Image (cartoon, rainbow, N blue to C red; front, side):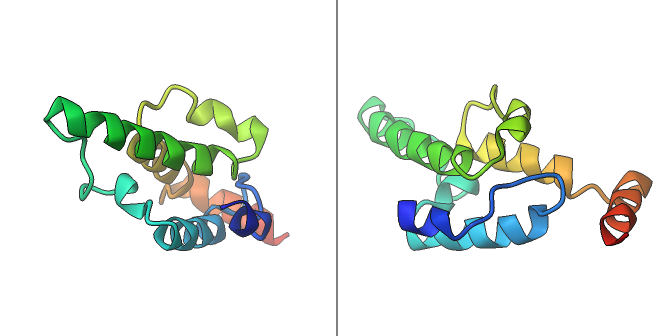
Length: 108
């Protein structure tokens, strides 16, 4: 993962869409993307939950290591990688006037 992370610019307020695309590719490559989707919910049997939690924590770590420190407050209380991903999407993929204003500012 470290090699792949070196090529990804850390998430900031202006690069979410590109960051998301690159992060998805890295997580798919490392067999961790399912922890961001409904495909890998926490399993019921206690034995399976332990290994799921370890893999989910590794996925959370991958995300955290690719986010600017100033942006980490958004996700510091998220319990799962999926929660982190959804929080970032809802924050940066807004479709209202504020998002349009931010896009226009980034072009100037």
